[in-house]
Image 1 (cartoon, rainbow, N blue to C red):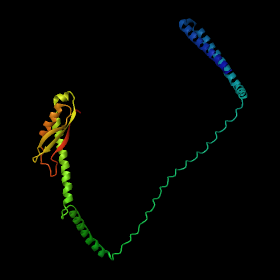
Image 2: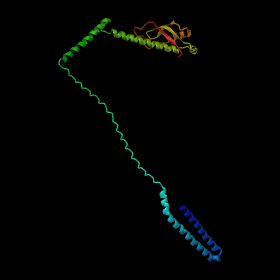
Image 3: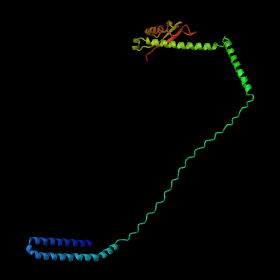
Image 4: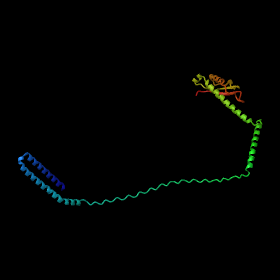
Length: 255
C-alpha cells in the first residue's frame, strides 16, 4: 500500500510541475493571455495541493493497520539460547627435574703410622748389605770372563754393536754407488738383476779385492756392480772384530 501511495504522489507531483512549466512557457510566449495563464496555474496549484493532502491522510490512517498485519504474520521466534561457558583448561603440571644421584662419600682411610722404633737399625743393615752384593756380582762377572775388573761383557757387547752398524753403513754405500753406476742402456730396456759380490775393507776404509760370487745373468750389470764396489771408501776404518771377507748382494731395479 505504501508503494502505491508513493507512486501516485510521484505521478501527481510530476503532473503539477509539468503544468507549472507549461504555464510559464505560455506566459512568456503569449503575453496577451497572461491573466488566463495565471488562473490556470493557480487552479493547478490548488488541485495539486488537494491531491497531496489526500494520500497523506490515507497513509496516516493505514499505517497502524499495516503494522498490525505485519506483526500477526511474523511467527514467534524462539529465544536464542546463550552459549555455554567453555570448560576451564586443565593446568599443565610442572615437569619434575630428575634428581641428581648423590655421589657416594669416599671413605677416608685411616693412615696408620709405623712405629719408629727399630727403623734405624734396619736401614743400616740394608745400606751395608747392598754394596757387598754389588761387589760380589762384579767379582763373579770378572772371573767368568777372565777379567777380574768385570769389564769383559760390556766390551764384547759394544764391539758387536759397532760391527753391525759398520756393516749396515757399508751395504748402504755399495747400493747407492751401484744405482749411480746403473748402465743407461739397461735402464732403457728395463733390465734388472741382483749381483752378489765378495769384498774386503782395509785399514783406511777402502773396499778392496772385489769378486763376483753369483752373477745376475747380465754382464753389464755384473761389471757395474764391481765398479761401484771398488769406488766405495768408508769414512773410518772397520772396528775390531770386523770380518776380513764379506759377502754383499747388490740389487739393480727400476722403480
